[in-house]
Length: 450
Image (cartoon, rainbow, N blue to C red; front, side, top):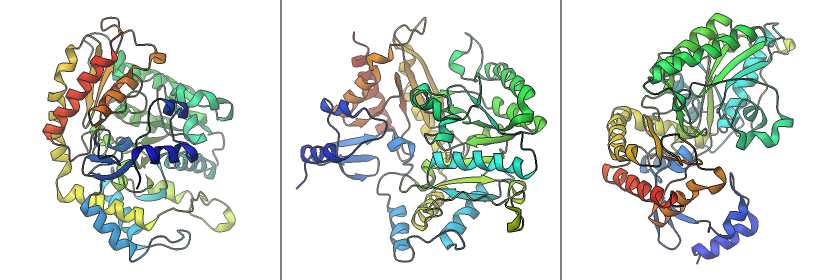
């Protein structure tokens, strides 16, 4: 029978884990999980962990959710997968119909891929190829924001701007135009999020004015730069960006991989600016945390630019073996049905208010520079000096101390550097939020000790 120790030993003899310096596990044991139920994970020694980060932001309605389980069991008896070139199936069609229905107006064509990075690759290639099909071959650049993150395949990595992930691979990446961002952490004292975001948009306007002839698209994470330390900005930036992209004839790609499906407080973050992008990239919560699936939803205008006789050689030939996987699509359908049947967006507003309440005391912590929140995402930024906002040196790994303390208390928190964040499943209760906040408080107390 497996135990934590035995399975960890077997793991470390054969596996290489993501976003991990494997040598760390010489001192910090890896945690084997035996089962999940609701918001809880349980290891082989019977310890339980409250999943306060939704297992990398994917799990919306709890582990082993009975409704999604039942849908998958039914799908297993019908069809697990079929080639998606020249064939289709009911789950893929129904899910695409639902996505077209619920995404911002004008997004009427759905292209499936496997994960968030792949969705970004699809959108980048599709934008470039669109302009090529229209004869505008000079358009081959992309504009992105500083501190952005769009994935770790080479195209997605190129349009990101977090040095931790990007610097090593810089020689392999295409050149992009990087614009200073609207991150409201840097606003002046007394300046509102809206005023700061508006002021910072002038830099994007300059870049578009200067480079629009050669730019295919601007890619952006609406409202929250999640992997970029959960930095946030005001919806007015999106409103201004949509108008500018129209003015300068440039596509707008909304990477809602992390913020889509209710995380931002609305079903999609773009709704808060009342805009429709030319592409919306979706993944993570799309299947409720069950299976890899992503979708790029775009316009009929985009689709028509590729629609021609084969001899024109204008088709979009991007493909993945598991495109439109039937099991993943069925999980996606079940997830969207839960949203509709249980009025999740309205319930999340109450949960977000609870998150605000339980985190209120962090504002006065002597080593917290800012507590910021967008919907169901709340971030607490630890600093060495509250008044100057001098950060702790990254080498000290203060966030790792919070992570380790929280695990010892049965809570899974995985800070981004010095930023502790809450991004729980939507089934979290007030008592569980109080537990998360208390453990985070005590974890920060441990982490800031010299």
